[in-house]
Length: 337
Ligand code: AMP
Ligand code: GLY
Image (cartoon, rainbow, N blue to C red; front, side, top):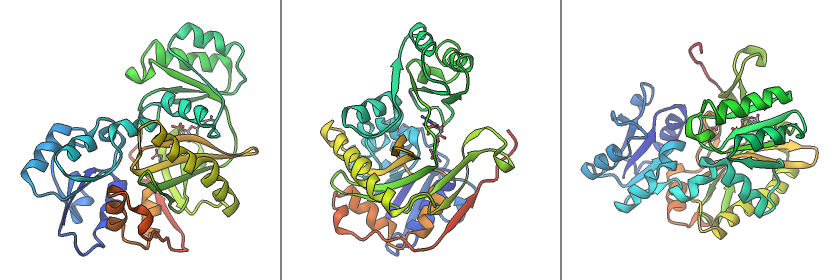
C-alpha cells in the first residue's frame, strides 16, 4: 500500500506517524512535507495548493490512497481531482469543503437546520454593515466569509473598532476576496472545545476532545493565532456536554450536509463554545485541526489507515475507533512575528 499525504505541518506529521503503524503501508509520500516529516516519509517538492502538480505526481507514481489534510487544497477540489483518477481519498470533495471555505454557507446551514450557533447577519454592502453596527450589541464579532488562515475574525469591543474591522475587510481588502462578504455575529462567552470527528455521511464518530490555546506569548498576552498549543482531552467537555453535542450538533450537521447534496466524508471539525445556554458552534473546519491533531491522534488506539479507508468506502460504522484514557499536550514553537 502506497499512501500520499498532502500538506507539510505538524498536523501532517502526526497523521503520517499514525499511518506508519499500519504494517501494510510500504511507503508514504508527503507533498511537500517538511524537515521533520522527512524522517518518516518521502517528501516531494510539490506544494499543497499545486493541484496540477499533485495530479501529475499521482499519474507517475503507484499511489493507492491519498489523505488531503489542509483547508486550501480541499477547498480547491484536490479530492475531486484525485478521485477522478481512481485514487481513494480521505477528505471532503469541494462541494462539502465549503462548510469551512464559506462562513456564510456554514451560518446559513446552521440557521436552516436549527443547529445552535451565535445570532448573525451577513452583508455584501459596506454601508449596510456600518448602519447595522449602529444598533448591534457590543462586543460584536466581524468575520470575513472565505478562508483567511484563521485571521479573518475580529472581536470588536467598541462600535468604532467594529466599523474599522468592516472597512478593513470590505474597503481595504485586508483579507483579499474573502472580505467581499462578511458575517457580523453575536459575541459568545464560555470555554472553547475542539472536537474532530470521522464521518462518512452515514456515521459520525467524535474523536477525543481537545482545547486549543490561541493567544501568542506567555500568559495569553499576545494576539489570536491559529493555535499555540493544545491539550487533550478538554476538561470542559463532560459526558453530558458530549451527549448534547451529538444530538444537537454532530448528527444534525452530518444530516444537513446530506440533505444539501453535499455529503461530507473525512474529518469534520467542530469548534464549539460551551455557553450558559449550552454548546454552540463557533466554526466548522473541513479537516483535522492544527495543532489539535498533534494531541488527538497519539491517543488513538485503533488503526488510523483502517478508519480512513472505511470512511472512503462509507463503512465507518463497521470499524472500531478507540481512544486511550490518557492525556496529551502539544506546545508550538514559532519564530517571532
Ligand atoms: P473562528 O476562525 O471562527 O474559529 O474564530 C476564531 C476565534 O475567534 C474562535 O476560536 C473564538 O475564540 C473567537 N470567536 C469567533 N466567533 C466568536 C463569537 N461569536 N463569540 C466569541 N468569540 C468568537
Ligand atoms: N486550531 C484551529 C484550526 O485548526 O483551525
